[in-house]
Image (cartoon, rainbow, N blue to C red; front, side):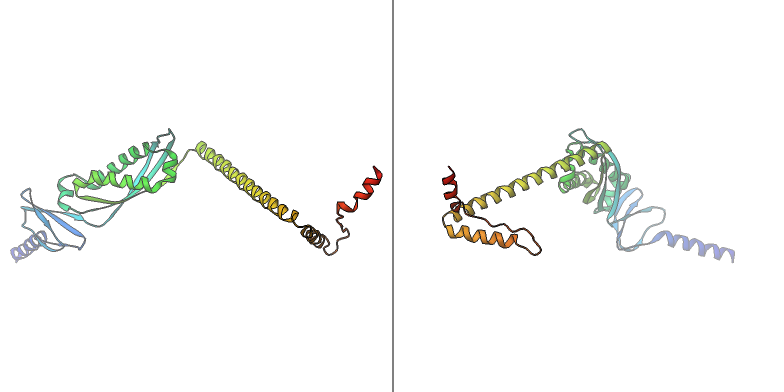
Length: 247
C-alpha cells in the first residue's frame, strides 16, 4: 500500500514537471541538455523530465521608469531628469540567449543614453523641443536593444528639475519677454491709431461741412445727462474781425 502511494506521488511529480501551460502573452524558450530547442507556446507544453528546461518570457509591453539622472546640458546647466521607457520582447530566444537579464540591461542602456543625449542638448531645446528629444532617445535605445530581441516603442522625458537659481532667472526672462511684447503691441496700436487719425483729418479737411458735423457729434458726446458744463466750439473765422481791429 505504501509503495503504491509512493508511485502515485512520483508519477504526479513527473507529470507536473512534464506538462506546462503558457498564457497567450507568454512564450517558453526550451533548452534540451543545454542546447536551444526552440520557442514554444502559448497553450499546453510537454517537456522531457530532467533533460529539458524552459524559461518563460512575457511578450507584454513593459513600462520601465528611468531613475532621475544628473545631467549637465550643452550650455552648462545642471539639471535632474527622469524618463519612462515602453518596450516589449519580440524575439524570446534572443532575450534569453543574448543577454543575461534583459530588463536590467534595458534599464542601464536607458540611463546612459538619457545622460549622453541630454548632455548634447541645450536647456531651451530640452524644454521647448521635448518631442524631438523623445524621438532621438527612442531611436538610440531601440538600436542598442535590437540585438536582444527587444523593441522600444516609446520614450518620454517625464520631469526636468531645474535649480532654484535657474528657475528665478527664467522667471525674470519670461517677465521681461512679456513686457517687451506688451510695449510692442502698445506701440503698434498707437501707430495704427495715428495713421487712422491722419487719414480722417485729411478727409475732413477737404469738406468744411464735415467739420461742422464733427462739432455736432462732439457736443452730443459731451452733453450727457447730469452734466453741468457744455462746451460750444466757435470757428476761428468768427473771431478774426475782432483780432484784426485790436491789432
